[in-house]
Image 1 (tube, one colour):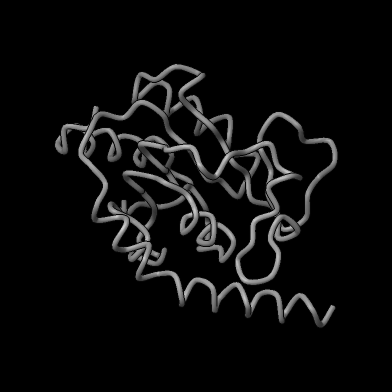
Image 2 (cartoon, one colour):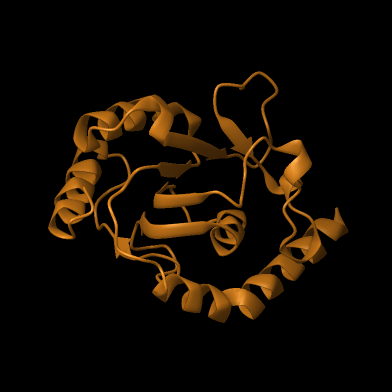
Length: 173
């Protein structure tokens, strides 16, 4: 549909107009230990393996972790994780909160973006959320992240080992 292109363009304009506020807010975050984590994933088949590795490496509890799965089209039978799609977003970066049981106002200590590609809609969420420390891959827009881990996407154990190593060095664990 022609309007999806317009919607995407307005969301890109929203990011361009609000990136400076985001960067200012990002520099104001305080240094403290990690208590709650949010993970962005775009491959629902990788969630269980990644979740197991995160629990093993970071020694966190189930209630400290929230997983958000990005899918181009929502599958109706998936209810275990919070799934977002472009339909959750409106014009000019507006996130449709009522269709999603997820709070943008909650403060998270750590975000791990374990996605294969850099998604416009996940970047929109990053702009609107309050997250102290953000981790991703080097092919993401580096303005949004504090730490970029250079490894292959399918090597989950290497990625989580690097996360643990750097979070320990930064005294966040």
